[in-house]
Length: 155
Figure 1 (cartoon, rainbow, N blue to C red):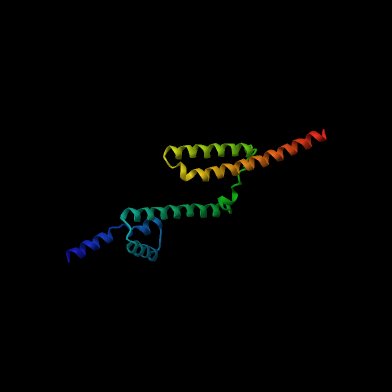
Figure 2: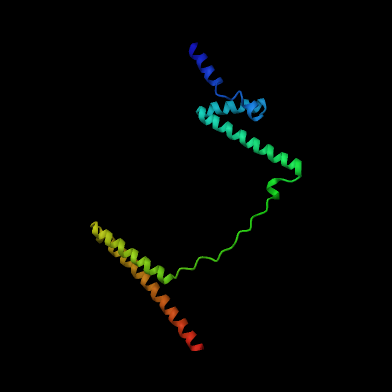
């Protein structure tokens, strides 16, 4: 019997009896909150946090409604969208230079793997990747040369 009294006193002391006074909820809502909190087995700290959050949300809603009644408009509606200044896009990195960096990274990776004794495992993969990047660089070089020849021919 004493343990039942202790359980009742603990559940009564969770602070949800005050929810109507703090946040202005109806008795039904308070009871629903109490039952949901009990079923979810939240700690007292978690329960207080939820109640405080709900109270803040209610206060925010009250201020919003007061604003609407006072001015006839919602405060958020009256806010103008700030003009975002468009800056010039970052200079586009040259794909050729990117490929040079990627090849260098792949070489460094292979050297690190060889230092760890894993070079044989990665060598064929890395060399294939480097070869692919070199072919792409050759394509870029051909295109640039062709464009340069056209530009020189028109002048």
